[in-house]
Image 1 (cartoon, helix red, strand yellow):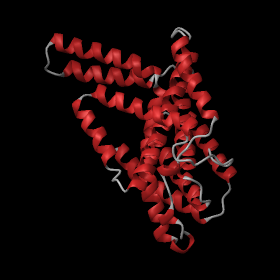
Image 2 (tube, one colour):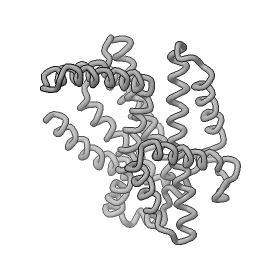
Image 3 (spheres, helix red, strand yellow):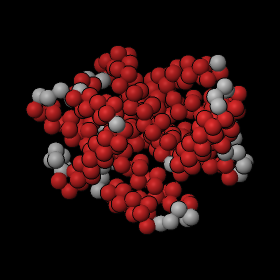
Length: 294
């Protein structure tokens, strides 16, 4: 009930903060100051409800700022996803290291308590717990990436509705709305390729016993792989738009491969991410790079 109430409050904050940061001439350092305050306040609270509200506030304020200053979609996406990831991951490791509280282990114990009260057989119960342990061990290495995925999903599904609301409220100030490109112009700058390579080289060459170095490399590699996957979608959408092909084909292919087998979906996502990486050298859309782009 508390989470549902927090969700309703969060949605109100999402749209309210977007309007505030769009209507008033706030600068980038105002947004940075807000993010710093949220980061500090999140340290002193283990509340999931507060964390949810903070995430909505970041997405709303960042979208309002990006729309008012006519920043590209990728600028909004970088600021919102990485800010939420930083705040979430910092809070997780702060609780784990300094407060001796592991969110994953707490969730695991709650799930085990539910399993023990169920009517399944002892052998089935032990099998479920064994698989749960394996999953927890994997997820613990990629918690930063998990937080990033949550932030990415929230940011992507929120941006268009937020921009539409701002367009309806401030139509005269947004004559460029209809011509805005989203994925089509998404392109990372050259230095990201070095971070991408360094991340995967760390995963391949560093032993897991060097835990912090290994997990830092792994999460960096996975996050940048996601951004290159988005870049690949941008390339495909750009080409499809020129050829008048419907972009809906791509989500349908991904959905079909998911039902065929998760391994096929992963293979397809790896291929798409590789296309995004190759764009660094081949520049499929011939966009070039502007200095102000991220």
